[in-house]
Amino acid sequence: MTRRNLRRRLAATGVVLVLVVVVGLVLKVGFPDEQDLYEVYSDAIILVVTGLVAFMANAFQRRDAFVDLLRALWSHLIIAKNDVTSLTRFVAAGAVEKNVESFESRYEQVYASLSRAIDEMRGVYRNVGETDTHLGLYPFEPLHDMRRALEQLGEQPTFAQAQMTRTQVNQAWESIRFKFLKEFEAPEPTDPILGRGSRDPRRHSR
Image (cartoon, rainbow, N blue to C red; front, side):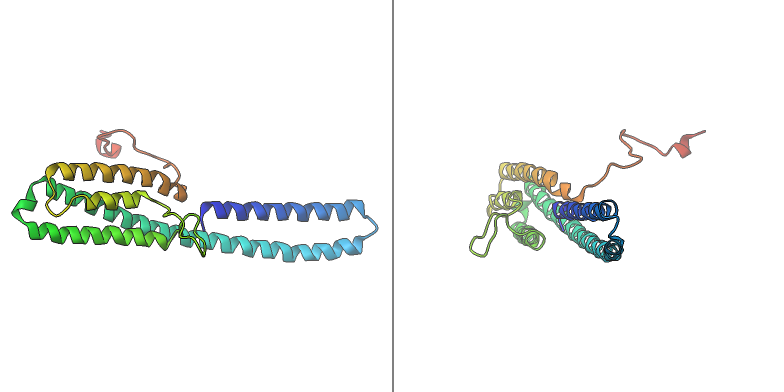
């Protein structure tokens, strides 16, 4: 369950609770002679609240399961991005001329890793605007930008091509990271270390 859907459920639950309280107050204050009706309503409130609790428990369980899927997908995205970057370094180092077969093998592995990440995304998010008659748009197009950048390396890549591919991949990665990580709603750390060259103060207290 996405963050947006969870908030919608929370809002709907809040609205129902407010209505339950308002109706109870109206019956209690506005119809003092109808205490039997109020007692019946009070008993019914227990069932309503129990149902709302189960409703929200299910929502949080689905949210936790979804976040776990996101974390697994994020790890695979990192691996795919690092694989592409590593391949460009291999090319930039001039190793292709020395071992073409090694480059071809690496390329196939990297392409498979990136393709796997692209397809795995579809298992977490459906296409934007997808219906029974329309495919919709891929939810995170920068992944395809990374694929296209990888394909531009060609069979005999040059140093300049490797540099361009790495630049394009980094640009696409920064774009997808900015949007993708918003779903996690990660909080700021309680005790961050923001300075460079930090040391454990316990080891230098004397």
